[in-house]
Image (cartoon, rainbow, N blue to C red; front, side, top):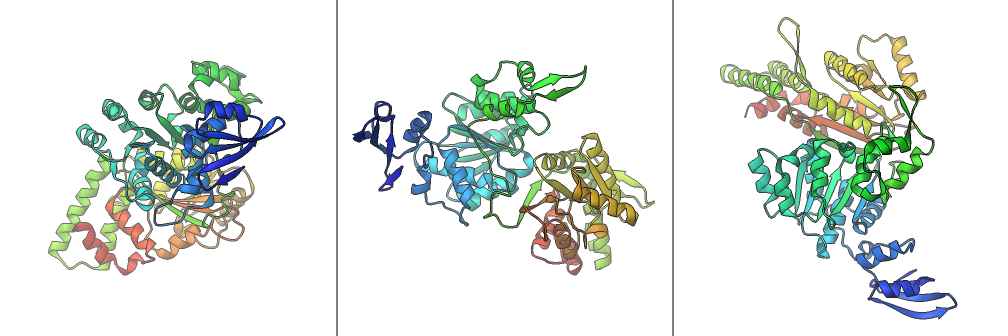
Length: 516
């Protein structure tokens, strides 16, 4: 196969007559027995027909005709992913977290826009990555396009959906709220990120998204874990991508991939993996280990809103800070104390004056952590600054059947060594929970390729050393650092950490920023 003048494909095939009959912009040049040379216009529609005829190794036109705008050059695997998406109306991107799927989708969508095949794109994703991941990636890759985030009240969401934004970002639970407006707006392309949110067809989320899909709607589903807990998890995704290939009812699909061994227990059939693989097609997947062009250390931030209870106490403490600032000189000592209170509330537990513990609802942050763990194929390190919060998180992981161990300042040395050895050498535990001061130095945890910060720390050294537990000699995969944030003080502290500024050097300035 040759590309001629960046305009046509020259093929040698036995299917020349079929190609000529199906593709008007094609020409048979010469015959040699049952094979023939065929010149075919190199465009998306023609490539789609050739693919349906099982012509293999077709290069996507995006690879030769697209300028790849943005502030950075795409990696080879991102180009291949974008090419795959651009030539498939419906497909799955099953690549691991941290390989740049959102940028690939942005470039592919922009390319189709330049060809007049897509006018508007709806991006459906969790709340935590609407701004920090998606809007940021769109601004870095296709900054010439308009972007709106549909959040807030129904009226505000509808205003964004009905506006003239080329990309509209909305969270999964927001889709049912403005489903009619989205349907009327007629988006040409729907991108569902972390599509494992759509595994259950009985949920409001799945039904709302499914109702938006018309025969001509392009649909790209992105998830690194299509069947993390069970082969049955693939049913919801397959029913969106290949509705005619799956049974009408989930129970029949479950019988295809699972066998009942007791009243409450089902196990996977031997052929389950092959069945799921065939149903989740067309699909493309890259692991971080395969992406040799990736940097060794990747950073991503997830925005997790504070609960109403947290916001109430957070604002009470801020008012105390304002009053203190008005009545006396602020020193690093009292600035540190009050800022630490804000961090404690953000982390979901704070200490009263009597050293009692006040717990706040931390459901959004817990769920975000569980999502990160589920999307990670290797192991996970979670740094939590406060012991009581660490114990709460460990309890939640146990409830979710996530194998884990925890190390804090009072963990005996012998037990600490046992936990680290288990984490490094055995399949379980999947997660290790750490107090930064207790295990940020000198410990090797290279079985993990993901480091999660439940919240920021006040020391650049602890932050960098914590990340280095996984990002060090012996690591075979790029390491992803995930920062969870929900309050303004957390955002400011992460920004200082990014600039390698130790908070202890600027507590008074940070204090004044917070009360401004």
